[in-house]
Image (cartoon, rainbow, N blue to C red; front, side, top):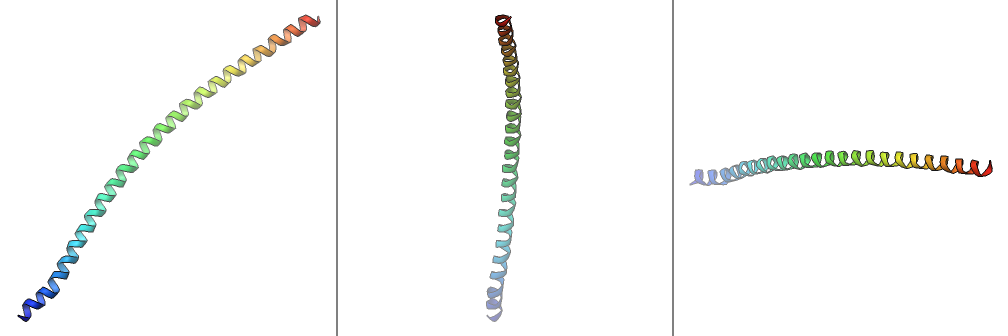
Length: 87
């Protein structure tokens, strides 16, 4: 009976600790996989946002260039009209 009590007293805690260790390792592995997937999705979304930002910036630059050209033409036309009226 002493041997059975000795095995029961020490074997259960050892088995329980090993089982908890395996459970924690499995949970940690799943967590790492989930985080890797989330990071991958975040990277893809960030690249898409950077692409959109670049396209929008390019479009804005083209609009600004067009506005500047129009303003330059208006200034030129206005200046020519003033010269004709004065001359």
